[in-house]
Length: 405
Ligand SMILES: *[C@@H]1O[C@H](CO)[C@@H](O)[C@H](O)[C@H]1NC(C)=O
Ligand SMILES: *[C@@H]1O[C@H](CO)[C@@H](O)[C@H](O)[C@H]1NC(C)=O
Figure 1 (cartoon, rainbow, N blue to C red):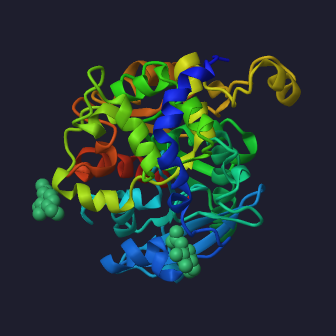
Figure 2: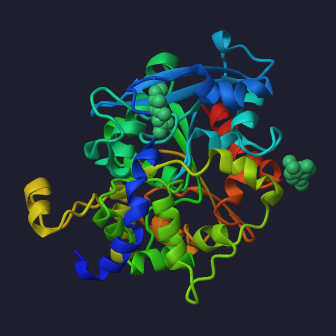
Figure 3: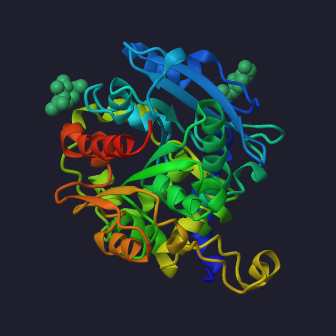
């Protein structure tokens, strides 16, 4: 594990001291476990106003988190007689289920799949605005944020799949974006999870992060932003908080030009509608945990796709070995149909890393490469339907035809 000299933090600690004191306001008032006021639900805010049927479901994970899961059908459909094949949409880092509905109704994958008659389920991982409950912990507790994408994969995604599988008695199509693909790939290495999955479609697929090229992300890794934030006593990572905003701001200087902030963390996005930025920002970013950031930074630094690295001694205690066990991509069954779309301007899901993922998988996923696409375009492109989702739905349909649905 990397060491970080604590004294280097002193100037930061002083600088952020006053901001840090106001952090309590940032975590806010969402500390009521399990409470979902309907006015605060994703269905009520974003889905129903567009005329779609939507129901809210609560899923409890093995470690006690209460996750919101939405089920959606088109205005012409009927949830009670939903015929289509179930699809679970799994969002990425600092996002939540809303991410699939922020483009226009004609271009948002969530709406498109519902229009096409699919039984659409929308996942929201722990810590996001829609999944902020726990049976005993409050989001102001340090323990509430003691997880990384590993738990999102092995607990959250697993539990959502169990729930959908129990209700629909059907195997499920998974669609993931970004961290949603890290979660999917990790989860699919587990025999008890993959048996519930019919196929996986991955947008900006990530298992390795060694070749991340986003300048601001590399700067955060080099500056040990993860350790800085921990030293500030924070466990929740909330980019709506003054602390984080200022900390990131301080990283933008002669080294990193952040005038185009989004590009500096995701790459040049060709195709999303920048005049809708304020609307996107009503929903994104959602909180995540500092431990998750540390796990992602470990992947960038070490070039691994492994469980969380606690350092040699604690690894020995927890895993019985010096290094954390890797997720073995080759153990994802060859028989599982997969489809992937990646972009030439994606500074997070770099083509070199995607290539390595492909080499380690035993199956041969169908691929759609979009030269001009950046990381965000996969969700928000003004022509996402024509460019990507048409192909993805074609992939799903080909599977429905070749089996007995
Ligand atoms: C939290 O809720 C209480 C009671 O509803 C209210 O008085 C207080 O101002 C709220 N605090 C924040 C930070 O919203
Ligand atoms: C971009 O968003 C604006 C504001 O919502 C809208 O008026 C415009 O038609 C959109 N442009 C495209 C190409 O979708």
